[in-house]
Length: 337
Ligand code: HEC
Ligand code: HEC
Ligand code: HEC
Image 1 (tube, rainbow, N blue to C red):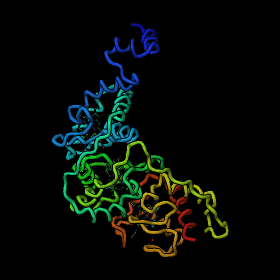
Image 2 (cartoon, protein in one colour):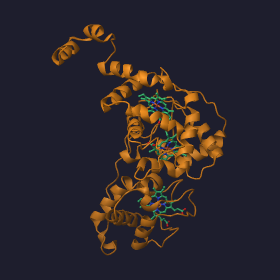
Image 3 (tube, rainbow, N blue to C red):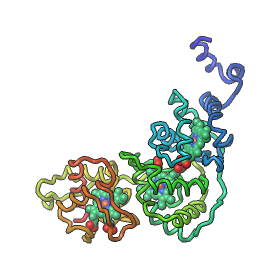
Image 4 (cartoon, rainbow, N blue to C red):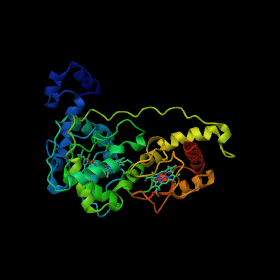
């Protein structure tokens, strides 16, 4: 059959395709994705509900952007790189078996067309203690109801935690903690996820996992609300230290909420939360608040925090340049004045 006649057949519609491909699904892409999903079904199940004995999680409930991001991460070995990550090493080759990246996106189309599966809770944990941990350490990224945040800065996109197996959540959190997942240099998404679980005991992980399993099982395609746009930054140029400009502070505001990763811990506009202190008040824990000291603390991070549960990495764990540090410091300087 020539290329042209295939196109014509598609236009002619499902009845002809039925003969040609032996199937008549809604969209041709989904039909092809379904056929390709045969590669995945031995581990994830025909219905995408997962298989605990193989460590393969439920995927019939994940959003398309998250599935795509993880398949890409497996493919380029940002995930499934560690010798202790037996499950990741099992999964990785599956993504590299496809020569065409397009094929993976067809599989994603098929997976999101599957009915959602809600695996039952199987593990014990102190739900009340887990709730307190979740609110302090997880909700600012994954949302108070666990739906995740879909529309924020891509750097800070956090997936939905609903419709996952508890044994998988527990294992994922231990892997982030132990550097078995998300710990390669330059992996910003991994770094911001690792921060809240660094130093968590197995017991605390079990508790927070038990709490996640109680969250309302919302339908998949209601994304978390997009963040409100930031109000324009008001700067009185007369208060700026020497060498600092209004333009720097404005650039710093974008960096603070984007590539600098600062807002992932200090929250929007630096108001502080469970992971990092308020930067808008006159109280300083480590410095006296002058501009040079702010620059230094951003460069070096805070290896030993006074109040927070975990450290601040150098440059917040991001890859911003020296010049960008000066800009973000200008923004922090304004915040507290
Ligand atoms: C040999 C078994 C096996 C096959 C076949 C397999 N997977 Fe996996 N998959 C796994 C395991 C094990 C994990 C869990 C990795 C971990 O714990 O980090 C996983 C994880 C995943 C994840 C990450 C889920 C999440 O919540 O982060 C996605 C997405 C995924 N697989 C999709 C697929 C797709 C699509 C296919 C077919 C192309 C496929 N898998 C084929 C074993 C498999
Ligand atoms: C600063 C933002 C942020 C915070 C805080 C945060 N996460 Fe995450 N989380 C992420 C991002 C981003 C990812 C995706 C990382 C990746 O691609 O590996 C993620 C991934 C996960 C995953 C893996 C999901 C899957 O399907 O594989 C789990 C489970 C998880 N987070 C649970 C938690 C819990 C529990 C907490 C609180 C203890 C928490 N997160 C705190 C941003 C965050
Ligand atoms: C992983 C979470 C995290 C990230 C990301 C992060 N910080 Fe921090 N930050 C902290 C912690 C923890 C402290 C110290 C709190 C303590 O000692 O209890 C801190 C302290 C600070 C301080 C000193 C505050 C004081 O009171 O002395 C400044 C300034 C600061 N951070 C700015 C930033 C900027 C700017 C960024 C982005 C480039 C950033 N932080 C990214 C966690 C973080």
